[in-house]
Length: 196
Image (cartoon, rainbow, N blue to C red; front, top):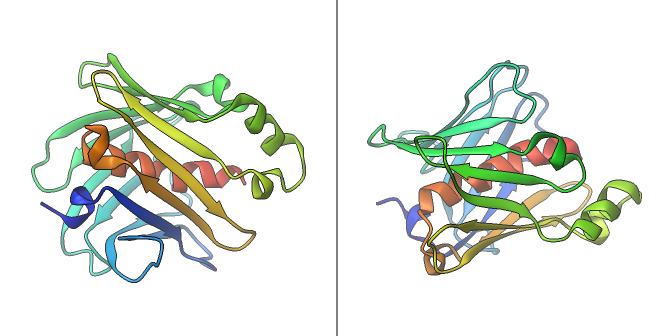
């Protein structure tokens, strides 16, 4: 199994000064010394498709995250295991509800809701959207909770005006499929950061 899927916590970092598209490095910890994953986002596409690899060489694909519909305001993203081709489920944004507080639902293969991914506080979310530089004063924090899981996974933005980072913690102790967590983390740093 890939090191990314065996880690209880890790840090994602968006590459600075990328003109078209985006690149994300996934590090084993906050020191950002050891790369355990890599993802690239194309610019100017009708349907988002993100692939997560074990490193920058892109020789081992770990995960594919693909938007299901072309004109989908809410955003419904299917997750597929990069090694086996197995569908893992999907993560769908809660459309208009996400305007005030970012909210996502996790769906199983038949479309039933099996979990949620959302911002920590409605009040903080409002401050982040209304107050200039509010997101720098109160970085976003998301929690992923799954039906039947023993705990939740926390996604905390470590943001400054130049570098966008996301700390993921509590993966293994939560009992949630680490592939699903990695997909959610890449979606958060790729899609949510477009709002900044």
